[in-house]
Image 1 (cartoon, rainbow, N blue to C red):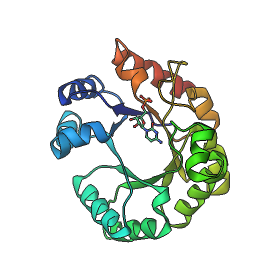
Image 2: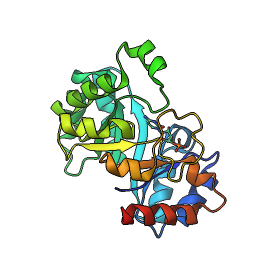
Image 3: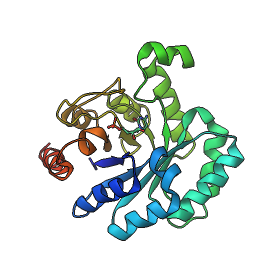
Length: 230
Ligand code: C5P
């Protein structure tokens, strides 16, 4: 498993200070809406200046018409990030168009599709998608696999079934990780690192349990120790 740290703090300075404290560790940096909308391309460049080896996941969850998504995917590839995501519910034409557009890049970013947001509980998910989370997440994952994406964003609890339905090498990135049973916040389907590991999760994403801790660096060290030991 490769730890992905969510940089969701209220200012660029705080996010960069967190990144600076983690520059000696082999971790992914997740740049989401908050940071990218506020701090943009300069923020990505600042992260790379701190550690050129940081792997960067741009979590913008693209969802639009296929051509607009492919245009955005190309701009993201030009930023030099290592991974980004789209919403699976944008559909197979959007997936195909995005992957075709990126095929000319020698070193394209990994592309993942969001299946079910980990903040959904079953009832609220059913109200939107009219299917159970398990069923829909698997269907979205198969669609993503068939259209050449590299993996999906899902909860730890769907990871194993998704790999069984696609391939062991099809990546699962899972938010809602509470490494040591910390407060779930708005997340509904949370898992510990041990559960994530059992479920075959490739990238556990951790935000608040790290950046709200009084010593985020020590917390990351503890997490990496657990990951190495399981
Ligand atoms: O603070 P916490 O560990 O809950 O952070 C989870 C991160 O993962 C947040 O940045 C959130 O936007 C993101 N995310 C998520 N669920 C998804 C996709 C991304 O929680 N399905």
